[in-house]
Image 1 (cartoon, rainbow, N blue to C red):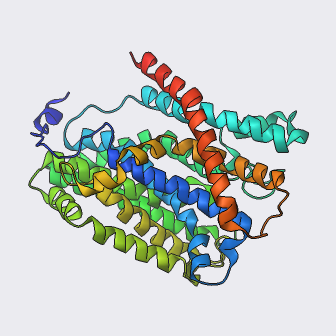
Image 2 (image 1 turned 180 degrees about the vertical axis):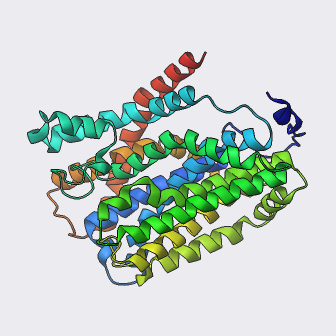
Image 3 (image 1 turned 90 degrees about the horizontal axis):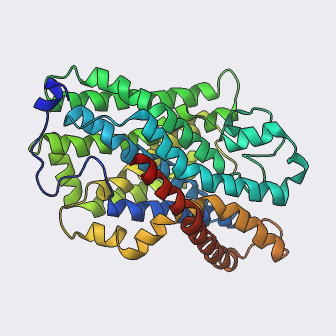
Length: 403
């Protein structure tokens, strides 16, 4: 460590958030986001999300779970980088970081790609470009694909994973640039404020990008590129800054903010619920048809960011000890659902389409709850098997490589 970073080493008091490691309460948020996506897709397939009334409106905005996932990645992956700036912890090694990310997401994803292609896209099995595009998660950048919609059948949700990968790859560069700016601060408070200012730039990029998506003509594929979603990642990264700031200055502004969040988690969740309710109104555009105007796009960015930040904040900054937040979001059931949540995300469209084919149902034919229950149970089973026999072995390989 340099002399400067050694002077930044704080005295970490019990109960303050760590720079790395597992946060139990975030398991529950991950589980909630994963199953919200599943409910949203079943509601869309059954037509429930198109029904008139408040419930149909709420179901139609279940895609808010994607920004929640992005914010989760922001807080979890940026934590060690923020700590390196504010507390003098070591900066993550880029090669090791990227290797961990690859082992975490690619094996299970590749399995789902192979299954979906074999079941529904046999005509394209010999298309090398399709395989390269899908296996490298670069499908978002193909502006004239052979498939209709967001991806080949069974893989439509993977556009968001492509955005995640873009964030993974660029995070070390973004973190390095932010660190250069932040280290000009005189103390931990100054550095933290500079980091938050840098995150404000990322937020601005998302809003400017959304406007440029519509001018001089509407280019919908740009909605699936990283710049539009930077605001969601920045929401989580801001929480990571607060966590590191709390460790660096236990009596500073970051710690006061954290204690304020911990003192009233219900208030933050209420704000998230209200923002979600507003997002379910026509202000964010026509249901199930995507963003249909620049203003609806901007309102969606703002409201979804509020939902993600306010939902995550009490989980990322819980009070010390056996708190109600940790008991609610970090109990054994939520921990299990959080562990298998990646498989739930990966397999849900495969299960939905297989179920509809098995039961000989047509899209938008109703029976939302009657379909949701078996689809959820089947997805849980498949996700659990994938976690046990694919994800866990590769995680063990990752630990062996790190040794």
